[in-house]
Amino acid sequence: MFHDRCVVATDLHCDGGARRLVWLKSLLLRCQQLSSPLLILGDLFDLWWGPGQIKTSDSRLELEALKMAVRSGTAISLLPGNRDFLLDQSFQDETGVEVLGDAVDMRIGGLRWHFSHGDLSGTEDQGYQRLRKFLRHPVSRHLLLSLPGGVSKKLAGGIRKGSRRSIARKTTITMQPDLRSIEALVGSGYDRVVCGHFHKERFEQIHCAGRQGEFRILEPFEDRGAYLYLDGPAVKLEWLGDN
Image: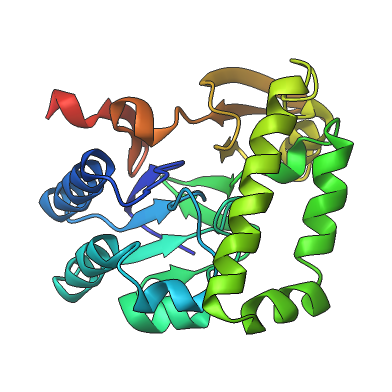
């Protein structure tokens, strides 16, 4: 994917509440003002339990906001996160938002960028990685997407509650990215590696295989409306409250 500019945000965690809806609409307006496409690095929704959610009131206003933004000319792409990994073609057809895979490669300002949600780099969290592999297996995914809406919603809610209890017990090391995977990306030719998921901003220089790159964990959008604005070679970390 090649763009002259791009707005990047992560972890919006839209939950049907008024506050996060306002933040989402503000972000979409900002993209329109900048004439920039939007890339969301996962967890657009705090919980997405399948295609049946489109037909309920749970996320109706968020879906309408996304649909209107796309119709107004803002290109939106997203990488499903750990909370909305069941986003699929039905969501894309409903909103016009392009649903991508685990990662995306872009060339902006002459640099090669690697974007992901970030959960795959948390290799120390072996319990989560096993659950992720199981839930995203084609057979498991097909089964989950085929469940009646009520069953799917209840099951997803149970998984979410279990995840919260599990996070409370995990160590700091478990909740960090494995820098070896980041170094491997830089060594393979990426100049900038950006992810979300870990909910704690981080920025550092990475050296591997004679190459130098940068790694950034982007601050979760839900906290202060943070987004990364890439405009050619210029890179700006901005907050909605500053505009």
